[in-house]
Length: 101
Image (tube, rainbow, N blue to C red):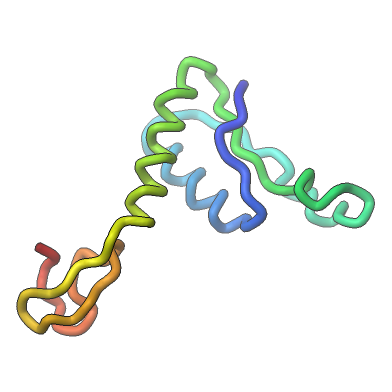
């Protein structure tokens, strides 16, 4: 078992969990209910953690996480129809609903 992802924002961890599991990789979620221990424990020790069950899936899981994070940080695009700026996460223009280039 190897740690593949942890973050202070639980929602980001659960999003990565969904992405990795949809790729067919089995994972274990740790510290899901540890937030109540903040104060008795150091805060970063209570962050939710994702662990890959099978060590042979570690590289594949890390590649999936890296490519997912790179997509989130990708540059936006400008709609050719209405010239409105859109974030990279949009497949369609938020203003006129035309497809991304």
